[in-house]
Amino acid sequence: MIAIGGAIGVGLFLGSGGRLAAAGPGLVLSYAVAGIAAFLVMRALGELVQHRPTSGSFVDYAHEFVGPWASFASGWMYWINWAFTGIAELTAIATYVHKWAPDLPQWITALGALVLVLAVNLLSVRLFGELEFWFALLKVLAITVFLVVGTWMVVFAVNGAGPANMTADGGFMPFGLPLVLMSLQAVVFAYSGIELVGVAAGETKDVRKVMPKAINGVVWRIAVFYVGSVLLLIMVLPWTAYSGTQSPFVTVFSSLGVPWAGDAMNLVVITAAMSSCNSGLYSTGRILRSMALKGEAPAVTGRLNSRHVPYGGIAITAAVFLGGVVLNYFVPKQAFDIAIAIASLGVITTWGTLLYCQIGLRRAALRGEVARPGFRMPGSPYTNWFALALLGLVVALMAFADEPQRIAFYSIPLLAAAIAVGWRIVNARRGHLRRPPAAGQPIVSGPVAPPGAVPPR
Image (cartoon, rainbow, N blue to C red; front, side):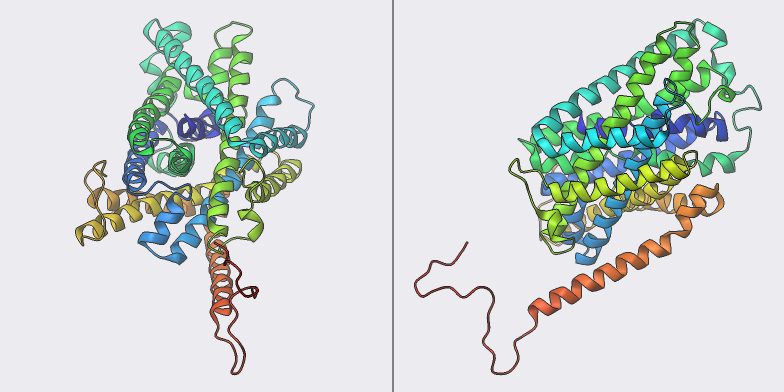
């Protein structure tokens, strides 16, 4: 449920509306192609989790199968993913609330949502898990209701619904294949969050029994919820009815003529955005703590409160979310697209890391160094390289897409430089700690204990 909750967020509930308006019905092809990549990533993650469950997830796997630098880079890119995803979620909440309070500034709503999810995450992991379960359940029920209602509308041609809408108003790809391909970045972002099942593995009972079922369940549910939902959106209403200023699901339910239907769905999409924002704080807190224990993140991010919550990492991510509130103050109309474009770079890095780490696990098993789990990546290593090539294509296409995607693409060298500098600082600090003492100086590895004292464990 945590993986479902993380994956079903604003990428589907809000982003699909804007992308339908930009690409037309052909958007469903992007969801299908990205769904294949998501399936392969989840199966690669499943094998890695069976090999060694850890809350550090792909950060720990990158350290084991690639090297310390890969662990450092992937960890910080994942943090960038969820930091900017959180900004997108907060922006979406403000956009949804605008339906009911059009005069309320976006930044005020975003700030209120941030305070709520921060409080939930700092209290306890049990409260987080319980709340996220119900958030996810509400989203699953809402999508299920939409699938049922949408199918009914298509079968009985309610309000002109039907397959004819897929080719009306300019055809299946009114702007051509290039714009459909350009939407892949936003679609990959929409699928982000499925990897949360790997982060939760470190705090899950009977992980080797539970995880294969959870991963397989996530894969087919994502296929139904995402591809199925987008297909129905296209058939229920003409694609020209959608926009990026309102959830397409709210648009559909508002078209039914039932006064409360649109408002009910608007409430659901608000909780959906809150849920994903909640998941982002949860995951980044655990990832930063894992990195801090290896000296790759500020020491404060490794600290736990009395409830065993990594409050330092959560607080740092929340500070970036606060920057998103400021972004909503200055550029409210562009905040969402800028945030998801930069976040998608972290998604692609995370997925690529998982795919490559599974290749490393397979190679280690062939050398006899580890035992390969029974739950395996199908078609490895060929399917890994296929998915990696697809992710590379998504990044390349960003250079030719709209302005927010181009901003994200041209920020890649800056992100790479920042991570490289950070890695040099980490290595320099480690080298300083390992440096031998000067001639004549005693070797001291810690506080000097009195004679007969028991050394600390």
